Amino acid sequence: MRTPHTSPGSPTSWRTTLRRTLSAAAVATLAAAGLALAAPLGQAAPSTSTTSTAHGVSVAHSCAAPTQKNVMACNALKVVAGTPRSAHAESDLTAAAAPSGYGPASLQAAYNLPSAGGGSGQTVAIVDAYDDPNAEADLAVYRSQYGLPACTTANGCFSKVDQNGGTKYPRGDSGWAEEISLDLDMVSAACPNCKILLVEASSATMTNLGTAVNTAVRLGAKFVSNSYGGGESSSDPTFDTQYFDHPGVAITVSSGDNGYGVEYPAASRYVTAVGGTSLRTASNSRGWTDTVWSGAGSGCSAYDAKPAWQTDSGCARRTVADVSAVADPNTGVAVYDSYRQATGWMVFGGTSASAPLIAATYALAGSPSSGSYPASFPYAHTSALYDVTSGSNGSCSGSYLCTGSSGYDGPSGLGVPNGTAAFTG
Image 1 (cartoon, rainbow, N blue to C red):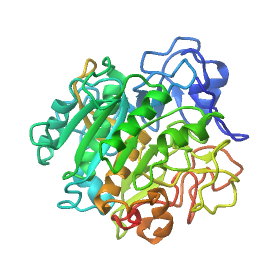
Image 2: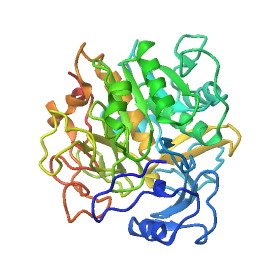
Image 3: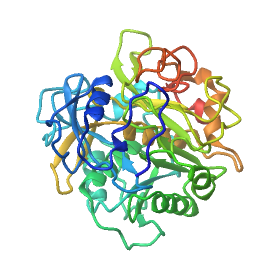
Image 4: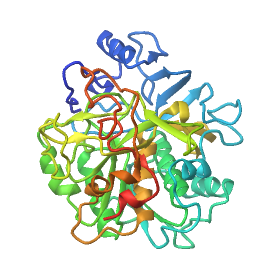
């Protein structure tokens, strides 16, 4: 696997381990980020990576830490014990009979998104690895629960293809299936009228996932969500050109779930890197407040050039992130999944939740103009975002790169959506 670039003093990602056995250094890293291990030191991590405890809830990575070079991991975090503050009642969150966590109405209200109308005729593509055979059926349960219009193959709203655009789907994987369910549900929550294209890569290599991105664009999607990441490498500028340089297409990528430090492809200069927040109700005029989530990825890229629209002075190269949305599992979102593992309603967090939410918000704003780079749009409409001014995701000498502050900061970017105006050209 590729080793993530980290700035001095930043926590080292769990993905830097070549085995799924934690070292003392990794334990110290998690402790510095406010996480406590649920397994003893030296015990091999489960197939879905290490279970951690954060702010009262226990979470598990849906996808295992990659053990090979250029292999990505999904950024979904499943709540496995405890009750998030977004939950409406105490329940068994691993297989609840009814949903806990934020649903569409809460997310639309928090980010001032239209509850009806908008997005009609737009297609949001979800790119993930491996197959979820239950994707369409699980999506139907989610949408029915919340009174959203049906989105099926039969009515032309939902479609699923392999990375080349055909129907030779890859093998199933329960961890990535959870990621797929999270992505589909978040697009549905933000943009119920959007069509959804699920493109399943043959494996989690950057080459296969990148091929799936190209396929999504070739099939007409103007909005492509990617909820995965790995360490940076000198190959990234080449990957940028091969897979992510698509003018007129809004491509979102989750910034990572391991605190301060940069992942790829969030570091690509052509994408909208989406950070994460903790979302809570508040007594202010908005009725909600976002603070930096401690797990959100951010920082300075080691290899990718700075896009013209970024003007912060703390990074000579690309700075992560651009914008953000809810990602804290402790204020997590409701998801329905039934493939292999726990079946039922669960609560998820991670920047895997925020990336599809932002992709769907772009779709609500309308098709990007031909030749434009939608990653630049929020920088031209900063007043149409709710600024995130508090919270931290690690240690960087108090810099804006790891600390919420007025205006731009690394973990939350320019802020969270206040309607769709910031996502128009």
